[in-house]
Amino acid sequence: MSRLAIFGLVIVCILVIVAIFAPWIATQDLATINLPMRYLSPSGQHWFGTDGLGRDVFARVVYGARISLRVGIVVVLVSSVVGTVFGALAGYFGGWIDRFMSGYIFNVFLAFPGLLLAIALVAFLGAGLNKLILALCIIGWVGYARLIRGQVLKVREYDFVQAARALGASDARILFVHILPNAIQPLIVQASLGMAGAVLAEASLSFLGLGVPPPAPSWGVMIEEARGLDTLQAAPHVLIFPGIAIVLSVLAFNFIGDGLREYLDPRQRKR
Amino acid sequence: MSSLKHKTLGLVRRLGILLLVVWTVVSLVTLLIELVPGDPATAILGDQATPEQIVQFRSRHGLDRPPFFVSLQSDASGTKHLRWNGAENRYVDYWRALLHGDMGRSFRTDQPVVELIRLRYPATIELALASLLVAVAIAVPLGVVAGSNRGTWIDNISSVVALVGISLPSFVIGPLLVYVFAVKLGWFAPTGSEEWSDIVLPAITLGAALSAILTRMVRSSVIEELGEDYVRTARAKGLSERSVIYKHVLKNGLIPVVTILGLQLGVLLAGAIITEKIFGWQGLGLLLIDDGIGKRDYRLVQGCVLVISVTYIIANSLTDMIYRWLDPRIRVS
Image (cartoon, rainbow over all chains, first blue to last red; front, side, top):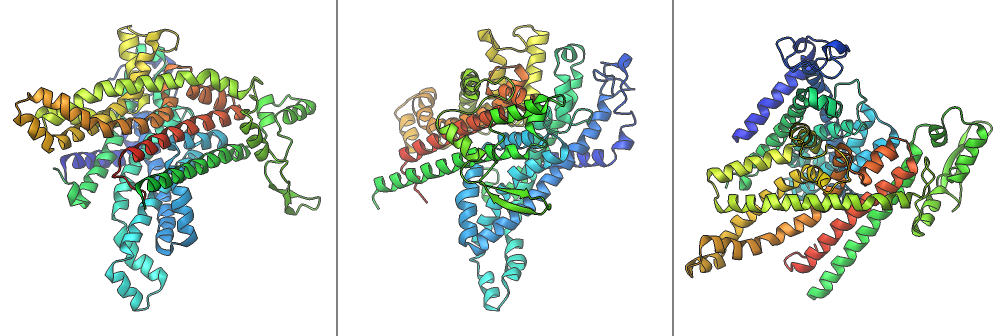
């Protein structure tokens, strides 16, 4: 695998460890407001300094990893499962469900800016973590469905599937035991890129005030709070650390996705 | 089937999809408003509003009419049953008004939504075009240099720059640019859209990701063209490498890039929402986020979402159709 993919893997491992062991890694309290201690520069006491309310930036970035990963994992899991079910049904049975999916759903979602749809959904549903996750799943599942439908259409014609059919296997058995395991590889690539997309979308919506509401240490919220002129002037590090966290996470998942894609498809390996 | 007939059929199909998508968007924005928790009237007027005020508000904005053709209603005994409302419902109302160029009135200011959007629309288009310009100005030279020096350290550096550019979200780049160029250097105002120079930072913020994508495209396009026969001919007749690249390769290599530019205009429109928020740029995105969602002015939210997405859809479809028309290799599947 490429060096970039390994770099991505290392970053993701760090991210997961940080998220799981957050209470042990960040010993400072992340919510206590301490105005006399505001805008402190990074030091041994506060590794990433303190923000405009005197809260420890390191602790907030560490707990922010929990929010990002939670959103990413739930969104990718739910939308890939839903997408796989509908994509497989459409690809395997064809008929009206396939015509509806590939003729209507795919085209509509392709033609619509995903972020705008998420913003619109959250605007009407109201802000909040669960509603944000719901909105991201709604815009996310179609990509998986398209992918799986295409794969199933391809694998369906293979000889071993014909053989299973000739032996009298049921539709469910053919679909779940024979077709899906052979169709699912590209899904891993898509899921990895989907993690990057979900982390980015969560931060974007939280930045716009449509995601996790403010006291929560979402990286997007932290950037929104840090971009005021007073804060920029007094303590740019309040902006920089959550910014680095977002960029590294997104890069890492993208690197892994690209690396996996190259690994699974030899034709795309380094020219 | 003749080629022309084939192409025409393709265009008709695209137009059909376009109409289907627009219908879906309008239906979504009209029906999504039903998801709003609580009553929009009390959300806008507050708890102190008298019943008369609420009744008046609801009838003024057509909220007293049934939401859709059918609705679920509970009768006196509490059992729920479907009721047929006929064509006198808010879904039809919205369509009827829309076809007359009317998007209703703002819940807050009572101004026509169309008017509010018309005032803000040019600023967003201006920003999108400026960032296209920024993206092209960065991507074409960088891509050409990388592509014609394939595999060297110049190529590697430009690839890394492009990769980082793609991964930098606008809400990270934007505030960083504000910090460096407004707070530290004082060259530009941190926010606003009055002076001509106010567009520089937002345009760079919005154009950065696009320039990264474009750089990659120009690079691979240049590499591909460099392998063509006409390049060998040009070199053989003694042209300098410089003129080979700028007179021959670039002309051919930019065709696919132009197409991508058209497609990306739509992406820019959606991305503009965040950029406008960062810089206080008085465009549609800011109207949607601050005045629409921020003040729970759902009529305005409907209008903004509708206009942004329809612009996006039309920009995409136009590019797609022109591309299909121009390039005979792309056939209708």
